Amino acid sequence: MDALYPLRLRPILRRYIWGGRRLETVLGKTLGPGNDYAESWEVCDRGTDQSLVEYGTLAGTMLGQLVAQRGAELLGRNHPLPRFPLLLKFLDAARTLSVQVHPDDARAARLDPPDLGKTEAWVVLAAEPGSTIYAGLKPGVDRHALAEAIRKGTCQQQLHCFHPQPADCVFLPAGTVHALGEGLLVAEIQQASDTTYRLFDWNRPGPDGKPRPLHVEQGLEAIDYQRGPVGPSRPQPTGQSGVSRLVACDKFTLDRWQLDCPKPAGDDRRCHILCVLEGNLQVRGDPAGDPLSRGETVLLPAVLGEVEVIPDGSAVLLDAYLP
Image 1 (cartoon, rainbow, N blue to C red):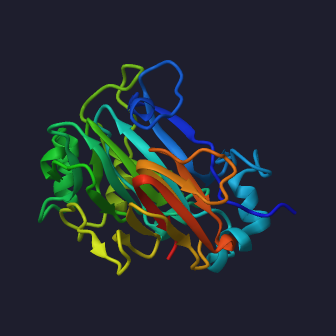
Image 2: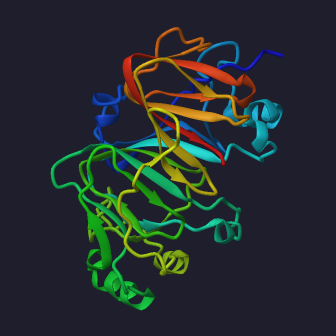
């Protein structure tokens, strides 16, 4: 059996009406014609949506196969799991996304078929002047007030919002109402769920000229009304030089690394997702040959232990892993 190694995975591209071209112009993805490239799923094991290993002796292997057949090596202390529980993606919001909410684990488990809940976090890579994030409800907004605003087409008046800056991190536990505004490019780490309840779509037509479907009743049921306004998270020190903690929750931990010299990654019996935000990064044992550049991601199986990562001058990256 071939030994595991640092795994680069082939991105899965998603096209939606709110997408653009910055996945290519900023992050270097190869896109076809059109101006609606909205998401690049970098690490995904969700039904038929499967990340494929890009290089090395395991090229063409689905992430789900590795979880099923070599889960102890891949996941380490988090084995066994039925599938890889995290999804990392980039989103290009050339237009404002719908106002939406995701269910928690308990509610998603009652769906047919059952799903995971969706707790997520955004890290802002680029923000045009005036770009807005909508996150959480204004103080005192309850179900009745929100339902009435949706009915009147004035949902945004009930939402907390702010103008983000590059490097901001926004943590969105399941049940938090949110929307990504026009002009934002973000990296997102989330539970491997795609269950979304669309509450409001800004009174605009869909691609066929008709309003897109809403899921108002399901969404109103899924909202946590005790959670008020959400702003950028404050990075916390970790005790490691150049490493700050952006999110620590029961679904994932997300750290930001600022590197100007080689550093070991992993070696904690966990699987790690490393995603380069700035600069270039060589990963020891990577069969691709070339360094990772901005917008590229590598999955480090737990069995590898300590893996040296080497910046070309300096680099900024995200490190996402299970608790």
